[in-house]
Length: 297
Length: 317
Image (cartoon, rainbow over all chains, first blue to last red; front, side):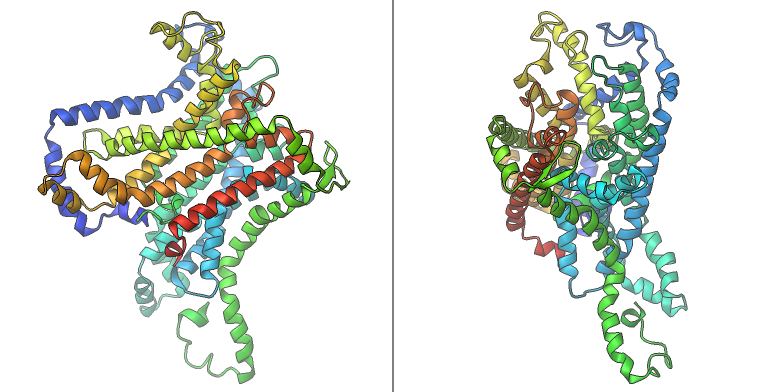
């Protein structure tokens, strides 16, 4: 529900908001101080990622230097990393995150649509079940997950990871899609059906396009969650070859018993992180609604 | 689905024989299952069944390479409770969760207030805020591990420049080598990665407070602090509660920070229950399952307390 609020503030807010916006044009000293404080804080939040890039661009000879910036910029970490099995890890991560996201959407969309449109026996119980799964993370039941998937003996650990990531990200998708479907009046679909469109046609032409921001949010959020997941990946890919090990596990392999290959570690981290931050910026304003499951009203 | 949604087209339904009506009633009751069944199945296989397996494993005698050697009765639990490190691990877990969540919520309250103000460039500044949320916690932790390097980590270089660090490669510079300083730095990282979500949740909460309330209070001559205490904080309560709960769950289950920065060591001296469970799992699977059961019980208690506090039913119906 918070999503809807963020997207379009109710009319009652608007007058206050425009009044505030008008006064917001003037740059009072207080505003300047606030803005500078906000910029400084924003800087702090990106600093670790700036350092990640800087470390990746350090020539090996300057890796032990004590300067904030290297004297030379060296891109070789970004070229030589492709010979270290990183490409296979990248492919594995794409499969896990892509497959997990697809599965979540296939499973969450019908459930979210039906619970938004229909009142049926067991609806509250189902939504409570979904809410409950959001409270649990794989870490709380890791041993169970490991033993279960050993007994399943699936052909590839990537399949297990797709299932686990989909399962634990389902709640977010159901909640956010439910909020979007609920906000689309059923009358719109009915009107289209009166005009001769089938129910599926009305769904495809009216409801899904209107719910697209919610679908995109669920899609990106699930993808990123699966992309960044470490604990289950570490557990289920023990002893697997590189092409069955996602990025998070692959990057951990640059940490050796006695030394750490920081250059490749950070080059890999940059490649794995920057696209994800950019993707997240697209859905930034809508994520909270799915995570807090409508309790912020 | 057609039975429920669209009126039956004339001539199809009505002409069906009477005796099928019972089958149809069964079909109607099963319709919701078509829509929500896949979700239930996925939750069942991935979330619920592992809980059962975990309980079962906690009573099994299992070899380090994963073979079940028979029942263990309560031996795994007895072993766990006799583990000399358990008390320290539990204490650290409480410190970890309480300190990280409390500091996160306090800072987030300030950040949300700041980023709710209108100033030029607010959008870009908010984008910067999400970086630690979007990036993998594992990679953020690795950057901090690198930046805390005793020889040339940038944090040490900076502390040296401002005069807080006397010499590199010293005991003082080796932040991650001493259990308590390592633990404090890991809590700093945990706060850092928890701030974006909390701030955004509180921002969403702030935006639901009608502007009229503030205007009315201002007309009445209330001070800024008074307005904050009497209007903002009480109306922010739901947002505060839910983001605090989500943080408690996340921080309690957090694995990558400790794993990447100290691997829970030396010994188990920087472990929380989550990393302790993971380390046990490498050789004592049954005992690790017992630790998991304990973790799981703790999460349930936290969630139940929260559900009572917020009355979930209002959200669901």
